[in-house]
Image (cartoon, helix red, strand yellow):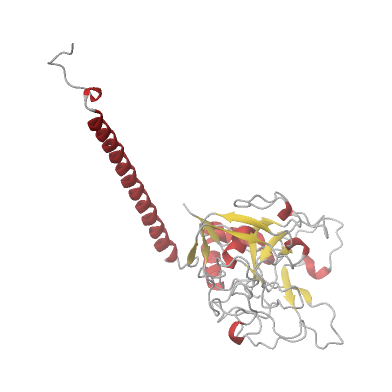
Length: 355
């Protein structure tokens, strides 16, 4: 017999009442979880907006654009052999510079840090190495177009005295070219700038994902057609390379950054103008085994053409890229470059992970 003075338990209640209390409790818990979820998401959005405002105000190291998490099919079925293992890749969200790093931004870095680029330093030559006399001096590589079709010869010359301040040789300068991409910078120079700016170089997968702008299978950064509406969408070579650039796009040589419309993510110059260093070592066969999610790049270089020369990856093509020299402006196109190499068509842009 029950004690009339004892408090009733839930089990002594009628079944209908008991069910109602249980359902009500579960509903209350669900509401609490939903509120916590909304508050957490609101805090995340607020944090991202604050980071966006902070990063976009960093004029010293360049405006950045948020690249949302997503998937892509990396590579090209009809490209060079090292592009042809098409594979699906998932990339987490990250920040990326809207444009290539400019002379103005790099100059600020050098002024604040006193940094000396590799091209400004006298090369360290191994004893007994067969190196041309001019390459024993500080300098960089300069494109030299042939004078005629009959006299082509070497189109690249190593010129002592060439560096980021003198990108076309010691008699050139960057006065009035503050908004042009900085070039004659090697991989170590790009890494040094990135660290100063609180950023990093993008991985090869991040770079291609960002360049595609969400358009997974388009052959060009700007879409499916080479010249949509009859207009050029990047600073690349028109005419017969290397004899004559007809400048149908409005430029011969480098152009100031941001002269062409951005891609769907708001990035400028992801095709042409200057090649861009990536963080990855170059491996001709990496696509055969790269992980599906956020590929970090191989642990070491693998270039079957020059096994003894380590290479890094560069992407995006340059003002020298044309249909008859590899079409480096395609988002799938890869370039293998020794990390100590500096030239008049090679620069970089930075990335940043979400904090």
